[in-house]
Length: 150
Image 1 (tube, rainbow, N blue to C red):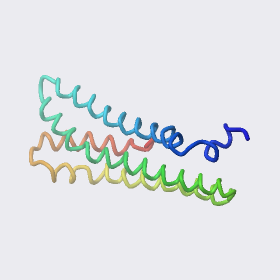
Image 2: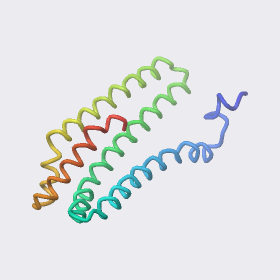
Image 3: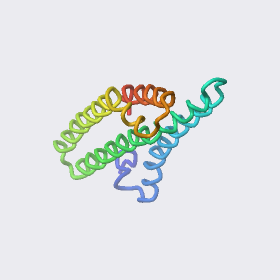
């Protein structure tokens, strides 16, 4: 048996969990680091740094939601596709891949619409400071509108 082609059948579950789980963990950690770097950068601004940091903090939960939906959708589609391939059902695996691409596009459209029309309401519900609201809305709108890679 060629182990490179049959890892799922031959490798122990613990090794598979580690080899497949670590990339997902790294992805989420990198997203959090991205926000930390943004926070460190804007907090050093001479004028408006504190307000910018508050705006980033308000946008962070929505960023994590985008990551969670993206990763959850991807993992679910991968599990179903892998199961289908293991059962030698190529048609279901192909349908799963096609549906995953469609679902990814649909999720992007939801976050795009939110970024264009809902970010202001979301940030506005968290603060009554106009400066923080404007900064947070602009930042969150950019994050949502350009989230197509997630």
